[in-house]
Amino acid sequence: MTSSMVQTVACKFDDMKDGEMRQIDIGENGHALLVRENGTYTAVGHKCTHYGAQLVKGSLMNGRVRCPWHGACFNVWTGDIEDFPGLDAIPKFQTKIVEGNVLVIANPEDLKSHKKVSEMSRASPNEDGRTFLLLGGGPSSLECAETLRKNNFKGKVVIATAEDFLPYDRPMLSKVLQKKGHEIALRPKEFLENYDIKVEFKKEACKLHKSNKLVEFTDGTTIKYDKLFIGTGGTPRLMNVPGGDLKNIFYLRNPNDANAIAAACKGKRMLVIGTSFIGLEVAAFGVDKGEASSVDVVGQSPTPFARVFGSEVGARITKMHAEKGVKFHFNTSVKEFKGVNGKLEKALLTNDEVLEADVCVIGIGVKASTGFVDDCMVETTKHGSIIVDKYMKANEDIYAGGDIASFPLKMLNGKHVTIGHWQLAHAHGKVAALNMLAKSKEVDTVPFFWTMQYGKSIRYAGHAESFDDVLIEGSVEDLSFAAYYIKGNDVLAVATVGKDPIAAHVANRLYSGTMPKADKIRADPSKWHQSS
Image 1 (cartoon, one colour):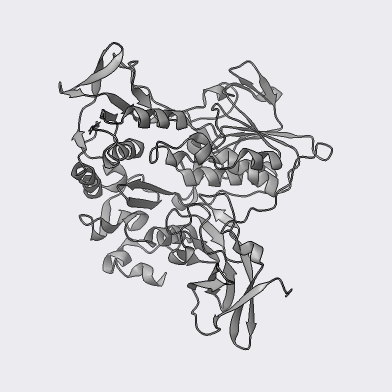
Image 2 (cartoon, rainbow, N blue to C red):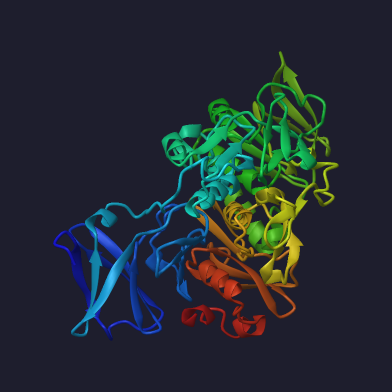
């Protein structure tokens, strides 16, 4: 150990049990996560690199600690990020056992930040003249690009995005609408330039020429590739009704849209069409922040989120909004918008109700931005999702990921699914990159998503396309519960509010294939996870 290193006596060797974690102080202002597994101690950074959650409050299993908030996973031996969201690793510290004491030793530089950027290569055309083209400016493309560089790819990496923003934190759009694009960028321009990751803006693909390995764009330009990754995501579904082109009718897709909605709704009557997560997050923004004078939500379903969360949880979410002043109009839709001088004034519903509105935000789903792959031997579903194998491969030298990928989900025994989760997009990009480099890496991840409304975080781990029963531990009414979604005797997913880290525990168990059967959880729903 050099004189510049700092160390601390963390504990006695027998102070901690296998499977236990502790946050410890090291140096003057530093912290570390101390882990004991299988009789061995390791120490890593104490915070998740996504939004900074304390990892000691997460879930530990088989050498990985999973963040309690959003499910990111870190290797406790190396600090590497192994599941997402987030882009960076956490620091790794040295441990030693001296005279029965557990010592943690750190370089002071590694204590300055809870994030550690992994080593990455740069382009070297003389060593590798290939071009890997990544379509789409979302997290799947960015993670793909960084994984290529982390694995010493020295060819050209090009991200071609239809937008004019660097890859950004899209979940923030519907939660904090005032943020500018550069404020929520996942990486600054200088970072991408330093690792020779080129971003081409306003490049919307219109044709894939597979035989020539060439992508044509709407601006008339083309880019040739050696390997292609498609992560183009979706575009909002439009509401084709009379008056749909009036001013102050918005679709939320990018930071400019979010900023325009935030500016337009101040002191105005807001109407939200659609009871999706995005729609209700926008409604919460309008009413909770006092931005809008009133908020009405129109939805075709009788209960928001019932298909995902079940009727009881869906009804409680609805009540949570109603308690804040949101007015719901269920089992109906808009048949016409009316305006004065080209500006929105009211909406006529299919049930003949008339709603006064100054601003309308439409969130009725998205459609896959994959039309450019038609007629080029890339197989798609009826909804336009690109079908990939367990290596995220769609066809020779073509890979896909993110919202537009139909991929085999391991926890469902390889059944193909299309799931638009932020976390999954990262995972797809990483796996695709490794296989573009011939690493033979199979996609193996557990879906994890979250929504934040009125200061309450709803976390969901797993994937239940349908379920026979919902087993609830805690109180849905008090917004402190874990709801388990059961098919037969299998637990396929959990949704939690105020019950961290149960969602992380379930994700770990589903990942390892050790999720207890439903009858065991029914026997004692409050205890099964305490020993996991």
